Image: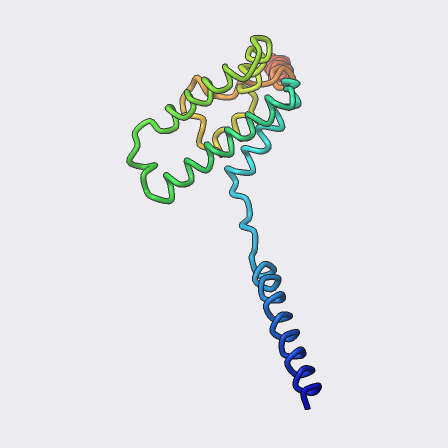
Length: 163
């Protein structure tokens, strides 16, 4: 009789333990990772763009990526709480802070190249998506040399056809 009782008790323990072990796995499986927001995706893309174009050291790249992630999270919290609209010149302020952080991270040569990189349409798209680029004529993307050549060729063709 005690043998049967021990078997039942052991079977009950195994079943209850299996249920406890399965519960966290099921709960973990039901968790879904939220997709990255466009701003978060742009932060990663901008950090990779800077890393490749400016030839950043691993420490520099990691620091820039971390800063941009924190900045985007901060701006998302402000937006979620409705405080972003109440903060005047938020984009300008955050843009200035980005410039200060970059000035501390980069060497003088990299900083000069960063200024040129910021003027490219690709970088400006990323910065606008992250809400780190204020609107204004000084932030208008400058045409690339290829675009300038095409424009010059088109103007020359128009002048020839007008004659």
